[in-house]
Length: 171
Image (cartoon, rainbow, N blue to C red; front, side, top):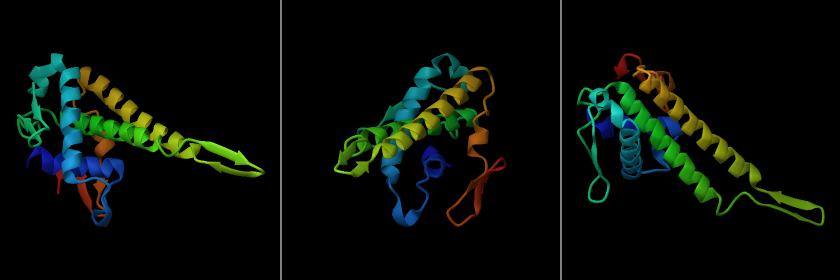
């Protein structure tokens, strides 16, 4: 399996974009977030290339490619999980920026009130949660716990309730 086959599914399930009839993001968009996440993680873990089997070359301009493929080159699964967590953090932060254009304001006029601040607060909390989970998993990875982020990804269930990923791997 290639990185697209595994990490796009992981990312979809992590961000709650797992209903095929109404995806919020295309596979191409998620691939780009994963590729950008790879750049970040690879840079942040530059001292650990003997563990991560990096450095990685990423292209998002022509076609989305990551070389070598971190899901098949012997890198610990924890590296792939870090990439997916970082991609989720990037997506959540971009959603905060997108929502800030139309939400986060409060209007009071003659006894009536419109308040959209909760939308931004929730989006910020979600972004903070994804980014904090990434930072904690990266810290544990740097301390030698290469599969620490596994707990975040176990067990996955599809929209129909079938387990598609657990500690035994993909099914």
